[in-house]
Length: 260
Image (cartoon, rainbow, N blue to C red; front, side):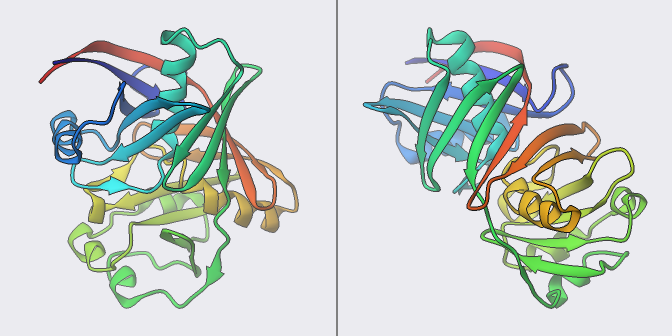
């Protein structure tokens, strides 16, 4: 069996920046263990698989070690493939997923994700999380999937060097670290060693928490975020209440075949 494979750099318009994702279009689902093995072989933070259905596509995402319920950059990468490589001529894609309906559209020169917002609740920072960081946050919040730590400034976020072995003990998908920014509205980083990704370069799903929070703090519904990982990426965001829009660009790095 031969399968087409695409490697896309998401949330950037330049190769070697943003967040790389592998996209594997399918006509029918492969066994779960085969999709997991493909994701492990790819060894990127996410591999997306999708199959066509009557009113769009069904999409699933795998890290090298686990299937996850939501992934932004691999959804953006999948939309990039569909719009540019699969003879798809509509302006909007409907993805059906474990997180419900996800719509993706082209708006000006951006691919825009429409995702469910994750409202945040203030909590005490868990001891396992606090021990993982040498700089302590000023506040901690819990969302649908992750904890979110608020730091005093962008410099602190950039200096973070988490103890990943300690962070695994926190029993959470990941930890978002964020602060206000001078050049953007906010900056962030995302650490998820529990699902095999020590630091994710650019994390769309984390912005389902970041957008409602910073929109509320800054008093505006359109905000721009920069994920300050080594590769980095820029996200153009809107707060829509129960939904958020996350806009970005993408570029194709590789097109090939998988031989099974």
